[in-house]
Length: 150
Image 1 (cartoon, one colour):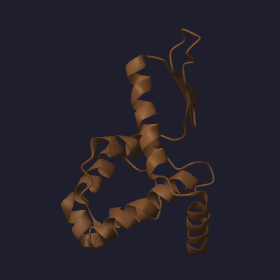
Image 2 (tube, one colour):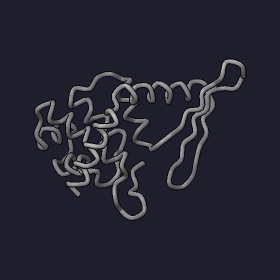
Image 3 (cartoon, one colour):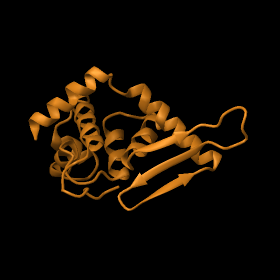
Image 4 (cartoon, one colour):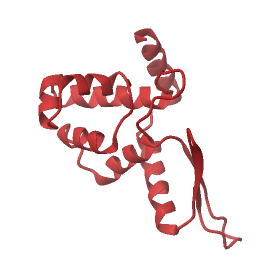
């Protein structure tokens, strides 16, 4: 998803992802200029990503993550799943012979994925996001900090 939602402001998800990108850059000890040079971009692009201004393109985010030292494919895939917006996973129950289903919504529509290999990628990404997620108390702090900045 690379479009700004109606009203022009960043979504909460993009604001959280932007903050995480900033923390990864700082942890890597990189300036805006160094991060931009690593992905053949401009410092302005890095600043916009960290301010959740505009959309986040998966290829750019992947390049930035690699530049910041993130090499775990599962972690990168989790970022990719999060970039496309929220999704729900409906898991198979043992007594039924129904496949796992992923349901997602976007600005202009919705989708269902029920192929086992597709659902498995989302389930793995969801597990990875849950493992990396901030606690509820940390999330409140992050959101309050973001609101002070805007």
